Image (cartoon, rainbow, N blue to C red; front, side, top):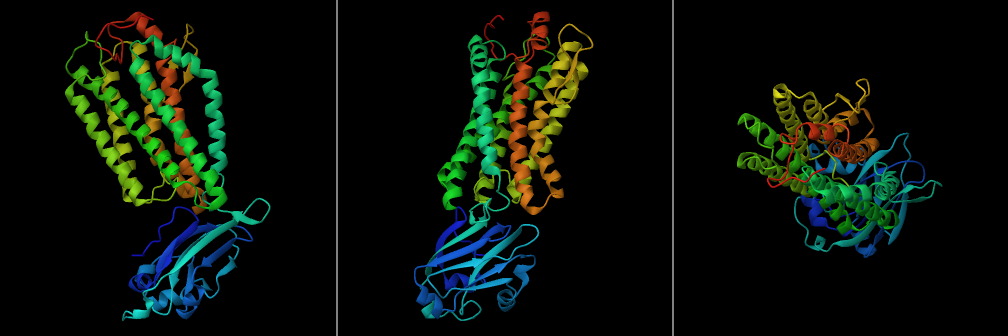
Length: 437
């Protein structure tokens, strides 16, 4: 395997090492997705005479399929572009292609393909490597690869949308939270998840704003963004599983007269906690496998594939739970409530029997948006896939939270149910006296 150079962005700092290049048949440095005219790669060396004595060079490859099976000499000879490291600084224009292309950068020197270790090859050469795409005016000043272009503007627009929504809906939401009642816990979890999503978007914007200037960004802020994403994922998963498993186990015990509780039994809590711990472990594993910034929704690692499989399994579990509940439910209004929680249906609102609304349902949207978008992204080019997945997942999960808000705050369906039956009110969260609405 390749020896990767530690890098947080597309301005890469490190040391060219002859021993690492010899052990791995080339020291792998980084990758960058170039596009357009005037794309540029520049380097700065701290010890150019030493690099010249070593015959040091950068090898650029467009296609690394089957690369690990090549011999050392074949690797060096097969480079699409070779840059000799003989001066302190150098700018190299990257050939233009019709569509954006990923270029992989490796380091090699005269010792790379030698079998015996050379004593004078121990000293390394410190370097700074900068990759730049052309900006809107055609100047090579853009640190973003083609797969990242536009994400910075997307995060800015999303922040603006969150701010406007906050100004419009914050006061009514606070009033609903202060009233308490059976939906209080669900609303608190949804509000916390939405706040974490907003913080993640803000942190990503701050990180990418700095990244646009120096190609490094603020990695710690990027980590905070991914942490907020992970906590929001875990919170939503725990809430949805607690509710669904609570419904299932309560129905199984035939306790029709007892209000349904958030923690209906130790079994439902244990199942929810177990799934949450498993998902948390996969999320952390994913971060270690893919350390590139804002790659939380990437799908190149084993952990990401397992996360998608988990979401599909949970969706099937949710569908089974809802089928059992709806099959046993006699109340049309409550049956529509459960349908609205999980899947597409026509739900009657107000007094008119003909007034219906098709609601894109929260749970399935939350669980299935990532796997569906990964499958959908196969029709796009390489530089479009990450943007489709990243933007799609963020928007779908935000829409999912909004849908669940509307469902639980509905003054048409939910309050109609509560006025008909306060004893068997679905999703009661408190074992104590309930607030009156």
